[in-house]
Image (cartoon, rainbow, N blue to C red):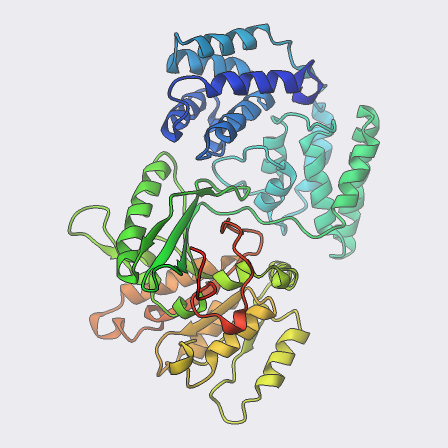
Length: 512
């Protein structure tokens, strides 16, 4: 087990390596750094998970940090650099620094007998999210390319990782997360949790790391860690104050599942008619980067309220000439709220509801009554606000702009956003559908985190239905807002906006 934090002059070496690598010709480009990472990954497969930044120094720092954590990583970096640039002065300097670096401090690995004890305990636990717990415990360690299926696999993966700066083994941190996940779940789970903590106490005593272990336990008493983010492209539209008929299209790419580290791309001004072609180009470039590995990326649209009823998921995308298909056949597509992302005064409630959704086996829904006889908006909103178990709403009609919103469904959606509700579904047709309620109930049955995949399947069912039934299928007209508060995107420091007066995702005079 290698510990980067205990080597002599660790921070000085990291700084010098970063400085010299930034001067290596070619690494100033994203493609150049990507090629170096790919070369590293030929020998160290986990290097493929190194976050790829658009800016030079953060991108190089990620490469150096990975190689310093990985056993033998610096020597593999020197070998990769010799292939990438065998002769420049900065490259030769980097290889000299690595050759002269003191060996990493080594801590004793866990004996096989200790591993057998704890994996036997972990094998009893089959009802927790193994990959999510691995993500929480890894704390920046690159995750495996494919999700782990069991806690035993997660433990085995972390036995190959470096010790943390506080001296704890990552396996011990995983064990602590599992024990916390078992608390309050019943007598059998409580006994397993106690046994896991006893095992950790023994390891902490041997390693003289009791204070570090106690710090982890204290931290786990706070709100739950975020779920691992999927690989995705996030597209944001914000009305331009300078050009009222145009929108600023911003986008971010999360290239691999794991911690939320999206890379921002270049912004551009577009009309609504130009959005499909712009999204197609973004996805074509993203797919070139995703080509080296399997996966199921997601597409998200961060939109102002006035655009939420636009059928973005049915935009055509053509990866070869004359063969366009709808976005939603290739990707799960969901909507997110631009106004709420910018209004931080509602984020605490949003986080509360999201955690409630993750902790519940089903997705509790508050059904909209707008447009129906006896509708009492105050009562409906008060019920929603008072009960945080309600984590989704189903609208009775589409949330159209105010001049066309006869049923008041836009007001219901805005009230739900104020209350922190992370999920909403509705039928985009003004006339609605007789079977929408039945379909919506089915969609909202099951774990909330799996909602995008269930919607994805429903839309595929609609697209592949018989010609006479295709256009009437609910999946053809279903809108889904699925908004994770742990995955915010950088919107350049724009001020919070009033959801109640939202028109274009920003103040009408605009700053874009």
